[in-house]
Length: 322
Image (cartoon, rainbow, N blue to C red; front, side):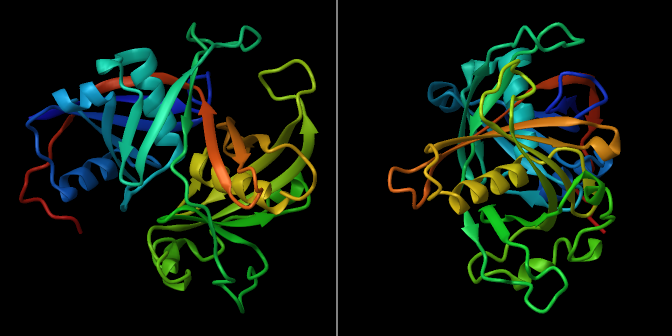
């Protein structure tokens, strides 16, 4: 038996840019083991693969779509580019039961359509995107890597299980220098042991970033107060677009600068993947609560363009991971 799949390039309107994502459709009544899903994700060998379960009657009534997110090495509770890619797929390509909530292991993620911007050129004919309310529980760790050469950088989890070392560098030239995850590529999935108690889950990745100041977003011709950032993401390999890390960085900046007299709503545009030849545009809006002590909402937005369709066989149940 085989499963239908579709691949998208996410956080772009141009094929062969952005971050590739495979979406595998799981029909009702098909039961996949964790090993089978992991083997399929390893076969695609993309940053993430989504397993999209066919909606039940209850799902249709609740307008939900259930998804599982896998890297080639582990399941994730949440990730940005898989959820944005799947939201675009449901909104613009499949539309099953008018789903408007993704059910992830981190919790429900509501999403909605972003209208096309006539100023954006899109090779595929439709520049409409998706915006989703990120499941967030922002936690700044208490110097978990003290004594290392990177101890000075903040370590932030956007949710339990998705953690990034936020390493600011001074300029674009310095951004091109890193070659590996600060904790070591081989330690991406084991460095969690150093995190705060209760937060020792998932991978630890390095998010290198440059502050480019305020200016117009790429979807606007005027000055609209968007904070422009450039970034690179290094985990077990480099990732061309990382919505969870971008959301964590922007949430951290909003909290760090909460007493600057600025607005409660902060908007950011993160450009990532340039060094890989897969430029991506990630838009994040962070809303502080009225007391400015916490975050009320994180909105993550982006486009996605369909690239491939096909079928993938289901691995035999007796096949084990090695």
